[in-house]
Image 1: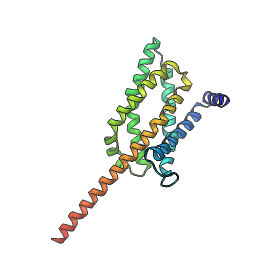
Image 2: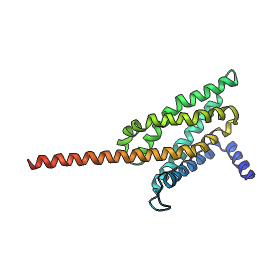
Image 3: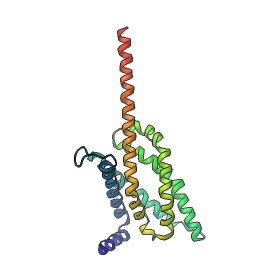
Image 4: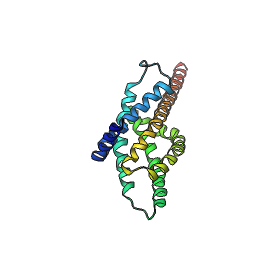
Length: 202
């Protein structure tokens, strides 16, 4: 186990972008599997939406991973007068600037990857505030510890490990919002059909 951690740490230092993107992809995919099998309680291997897992894995590897790697590189390069100011401003930048954009980007990206770009706005509006509030409850304490105690090259790893649980929530929340929107659309279309039938019968 120790040698595996040393190898991983070495990969982070030698190829940070590739390593962190792959890490994010694995953790997003794993989070979705946990969401489907434990939170949504689907039968093992039966009814599991592997396309959904693939979308989350793609999102983590190709969208979230690169953006977050560059973001942490930027935060680590910014110099502050004191360690206390560095901690306060890095947490503030991460949670007040990045997070509001990242939450909207996640729900919008999922809508597009599902082939339903028309649902993006409604999904963001429905899930945005609850997700932001829960994110702050989880990540403000995490980032205080992260920026004060963890070496710079391991900070995204810490976030990614916490994200295993957070991604489970995101996956379940996105699926619930998608289902709710689909039910609304089906209900709306059925009402339209009823109106058309009534008009035709007059």
